[in-house]
Amino acid sequence: MSETMQLRANFGWGLLGGLVLAMSGCATPPTPVQPPPVVATLPPPPPPMPAGGYIGMKSPTRRADGNYFTPNLDNTDQAAVWHLRNALNVAALGCDQAGGGVVEPYNAWIKTHATVIDRYYQAYLREWQAPGWWDWQRVYDDNQTRIYNFYAQPVMRAAFCAVARVEIAQVGQVADDDLPAFARAALGRLDRPFVEFYAAFDAWRDYYQPAPPPVVRTIDVPIVVTPPAVVATLSGNDTVTTDAEVSPVHAPGDTPPPDAPSPR
Image (cartoon, rainbow, N blue to C red; front, side):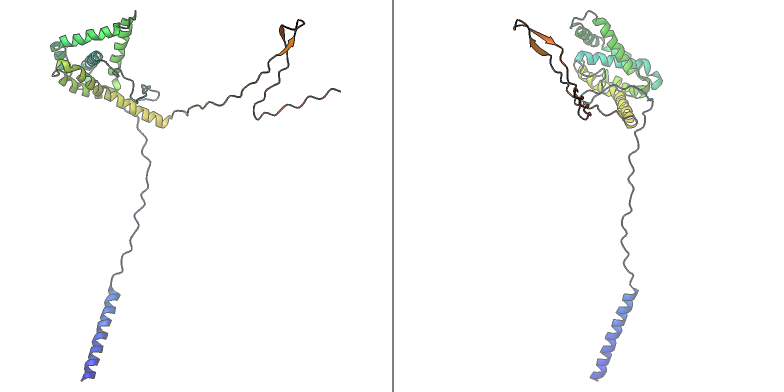
């Protein structure tokens, strides 16, 4: 009886082992891990020419602080208010074809705030007269023309007029004492379309027409001149100069001249 049970046990274990082997043979092998695909890194696209730009176009230079020269850097209170009036005047004259919306609020502002605007304007004129230039009026007129021409640039007109519509809608609500601070901030916003255009154009120009490398000054080869010989006169006190032979000076790397033949 025990032998029969032992045989059954051995048979059972053998059957179980066979099943395990069969199942292991049917198991799905692990999927190999694929390396991540190699993504080619492309260089950034070249900067585009801004709309309205052209080859050979001139842009203002940058100051040492990185800002472009515009009419509104380092303004006094009086200059800021009057320059804002000039900028909005250009917008009133030139934005009808670029969305409009400036003439009526501009006229309302200069009428209802005429007194305070004139006060800042008179102070602005005194600033121009203070240095005592005999031709201050001519210089002042030239400056005003530059301001008008700056804001009248057709390339930036659409962007400038969009900002001007926002500023003219706000300036009429500004208190008189707060007008200089508002004018400075508004001029910065009105200048932004021009500054952004200059930056985009300079990026395009510098990409395709890089500036030449700076010129490095070389070390000059010193030239040594032999002073004329001094000889005594008959008196023994005065001196005169005589023509003395000057040895030529050769730069480094020059081939020295052959020695003169000795006299025979």
